[in-house]
Length: 411
Image (cartoon, rainbow, N blue to C red; front, side, top):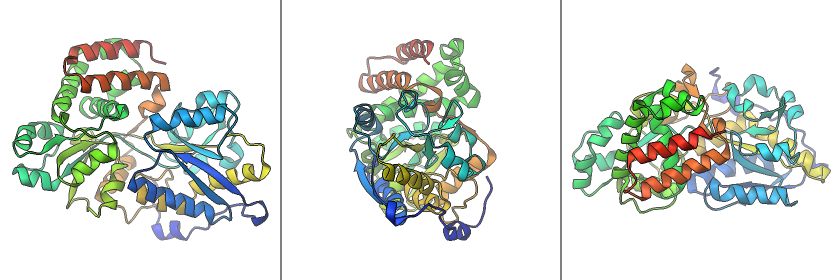
C-alpha cells in the first residue's frame, strides 16, 4: 500500500462538479444504524452536503439481510432511491443485468479509480462486462477476534494469543460467570464466524479450495472435519448469548459480560463510540491469531437509473465524493474499516486498524465469500449455520454434509 502523509489527504481538494444551480436532494439507503455506523454515515453526509447537494438519509433498521430485499423491491418496482449500499460482490448483479443501474465508468475514468483503489478486486467486483457500476467506500474484513481485557482479568485468565487459547479459556470464563463467546441471532453472524474459522484455522489454500474452486473432495475431507469440530466448539462457547443484533453482542464484550466476539472490523466503531482504547480496554487478533489473512470485502454504493437529470448529476457527485481521499479518511476512521485508496495514510488509526493496514500492505488479502458466491448460495449457508447454532442436535458431521451439498450446487 502506497502511504502518504495524512495531512496531504486531509488538505486534498475535492474535485467535484459543484454547481448550486443543479444541486438537489438525493435519497441514500443503507443499513448502517448502530451508534458507530451512524457516526460514520454522518461523515459521508457532511461531505456530500458540502458540494451544495443534500444527503437524504434512508437508513433501514436491521442487517443487510433485512434491508436488501427492501432496496431491491423499490428499484425493481419503479421507486428507486438516489443511491444504495450493497456489499462488494454479486448482490446487485441481477439489477445491473436488468439495466436498472447507472454505469459509472466515465466517473471512474475521470477519477483514475483503477490507479488508486486497492486491492484491485474491489473495483473488479463493481465491474460487469467491462463497465463499472459501483463506488467502493471501504474495506471490511471478517477475520477478527475481539477480546475484553476486563473479562479475562476478572476470570484470572491470561489474555489469549489465538483462537485455540481462547477456546481453552472457556471453562474458566464460564466459572467466573462470563459468557465466553458472544454471537447474536442474526443468521449472517454465524455464517461469517464459520467462514472466518475456515480461513483462519485452515489457511489460505483451504479457503480457496472451498469457496473459489468448490472442490468436493476438500469440502468433505478431514481438513474440513477439523473446521466443523471448531465450529462445534464455537457453538458451545456461544450458548447463552441471548441477543439478536451484532452490536448487542459487541456491547457484551465492551461491558465485560462476554470475553470475546468473532466479528468484522466494523466492531471497532462500537468500541470507539464507547470510549474504549485498543490495547488497553480491548484487544484484537486478526486472523484469530493464527493465519493473518484478511478478506477484502466491504461496502459499495450503486446508483439506480433516474429520470431526473439534476439527480443523475448529483449521483455522479456522490460517487466522486465517496472515493475522495478526504472523505475516505473521515469515514473510515469512524467506521473502523480500512480505506479503499492506496494513497491515504490513517496516521491516527488505533492499534487494531494499524494491524489491518499492515496485513493489507503485505498483500495477505483474499476475496470475500460475497465476491466468490452468489447471494442464493450465501442465503443457503446462512440457513444452515443459524440452524446449527440454534439446534444442538445437529452434529458437526451432519452440518459438514449439508454444507457439502450446498457447495456442490453453488454458483
